[in-house]
Length: 96
View 1: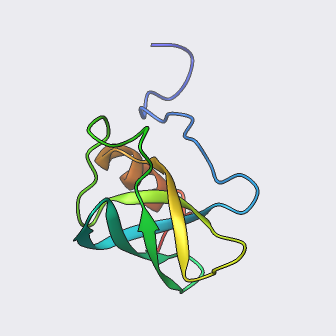
View 2: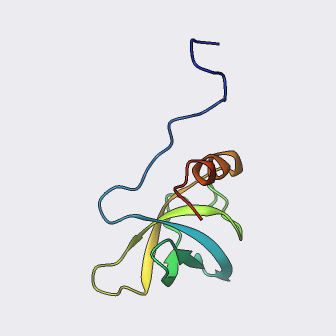
């Protein structure tokens, strides 16, 4: 251990630019999911090709989404947090 307090805190990827935290509500198929964003909006989010079959996304996962500029009810998923990382985000007050 280093001189830290040993709580296992890790530096996590935080939202950049227009990104917002979101929780996966429903799997729709065809690489699409419904997410409930931290700004209170439900959006249809797309799982990009670079994440397909590499990053498995399931219901109740916490993800970062980038809402589309031209259609606010849609977004692209940019990042998925592991369960332990999601707990850390909740403890630090980033998520409800």
